[in-house]
Image 1 (cartoon, rainbow, N blue to C red):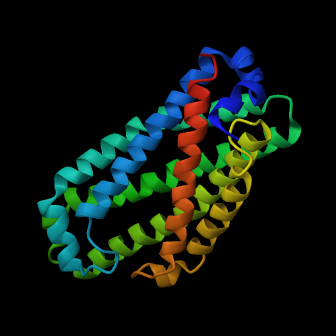
Image 2: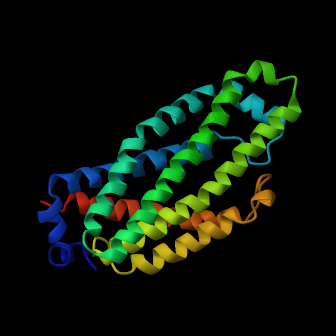
Image 3: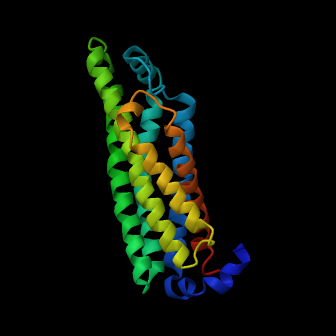
Length: 233
């Protein structure tokens, strides 16, 4: 479905939601920008999954500013994320199946917020208690393992959000029909990447499966956010 088709396939949310739909679309786009920024920052500067305790402490001592930035973007991202979730739920409207999937997506983003909060908490501790942790490499290793395990479990929550919002948005004709199989496939890949968590704590190529699904999640945010933003123009 081309963007031009939206005027035919997606007229109701424009009349039904109006400005709230635009707010929800803006929320999705802002959250997308924050997520991309966060992940680029991590990829460029973050320590490797299999980093030693010494490397972990050295990184957080030298790059504490990245943790401050990530913490701020995490807090700022709450409202845009929940606005987007509320917008999808509103657009699902009277469609019972669409509403059900939208609720799955909304519940999943709440889990994303909790798990990602835990990731940020560990990073903040590694910065705030950095001098005290230098004499306890075992504790540092434990903290870093917790960080990696929670980060991996977050893939399962993103899978729920991708499947729920992808199916709800497709049924409402908010996104093209091809997003349905893309969302389901991406969710399966994300869930598969979260399964061998023990192996992935110290790094695993299986995480690459999650990356593919994560890119589909970003695509959904971009398409649905843009179309909601343009829904009453």
